Image 1 (cartoon, rainbow, N blue to C red):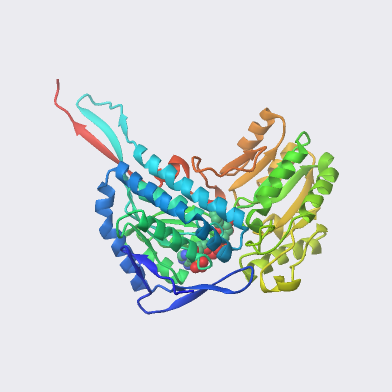
Image 2: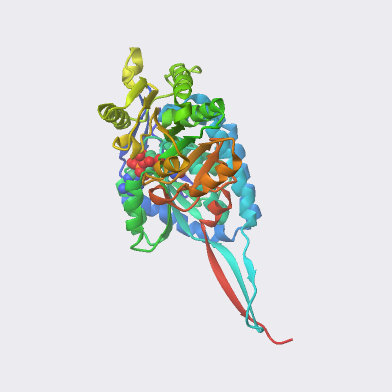
Length: 482
Ligand code: NAP
């Protein structure tokens, strides 16, 4: 283990004041590594690096930027095993999920390398005969990117490569639980030939770094994924210099199973979407609404599947569900389950922390099913972010839609039915940014990802993700009569 360094202007540097922070493995409680704790001055140096690198990068032809991004992708894939292991060690998810995450990170780099070449403007029909109106798209400038711990490679790749492909330069601040993956990705970009200062990473105290981003006029955009609480704080802070913000915040996805649904398929979708990363994904189904005619067989089939899940260290090849990220997460999940039981929910399986053998050293919680969940329970309003399925029966379509829309969140929803007309009608009425119909695989590099209401502002992924790092400039050209 060696003290990690930050990447600023192409150099690997410690925090100027020499301070550091420890990173722990959530499965074992063991120290994984130490990272620098940047001061406001360190952040200013990184922003300065990004600012001075911006003009040249913005004017680099998109095809050249694409070439360097593609080289970075190869560099990333050449270290796939090492980076996947790092993700599991600092975030806890099963190793095969970490491998999948590195692959998707590489896919994002490829997609944005290609999409950056298609950042088109428009020729606008003009009412005046001696004028022509057109638009071009230009990079915003320096973007500060703040990422969460649950997808440490995916989230960095999704935002940073969109920014780089658009011609922006970036300063990335990864979550304190998972900075090592972000630093490993930065190494891949550096080795891929991304010029000094174009991509910088600072690590350390979030308040110090976040405030330094907000105070610095040279930062023109804040791209944030994380909790609504911090998202609101950044949005307020960004108002001072009227910085652009993209916010990918939490979710509270409803999973609706209509009376005509293929139950096996619905349970397959639910299992994979709910237990990925131990339920710690923003698009995880939080509340299942199942038609009353299917409730009994649904609960029976679901219980037998959930009880077979193997919980353990993500490095163990048999593990299906890893640990929660920290003790706070464990307490939150536990309090949601206890609150639901106190208010009359039926516990079908799980409902407790796992402490046998070495598991007490980590943050393991048993996969849990709660039935008869009512609106009074916290779990129906707050994001659980853990391996817990809350189930409620419904009678009518309107009731299911109303319940699904009753949270403050609006990121994703899932709907299972064989009736395609009904699926379209219901999808149109759900207050969310994304709807999965008979499928839970709603995230794709080519498609816009994001939410409404408390779930955030803006979209990442797809061509919208590239546009989010550009400004539209209008040109009005006077021409001489023919
Ligand atoms: P969080 O506390 O908001 O942290 C997210 C990031 O913000 C981390 O890098 C964190 O740094 C940083 N941060 C914390 N306080 C800050 C401040 N005052 N100024 C600037 N940055 C600050 O969120 P979390 O609880 O770790 O992450 C889970 C949440 O993220 C969930 O709600 C989940 O749904 C959401 N999420 C959303 C998406 C999406 O695309 N919609 C994707 C993934 C996760 P430190 O770690 O150093 O505190």
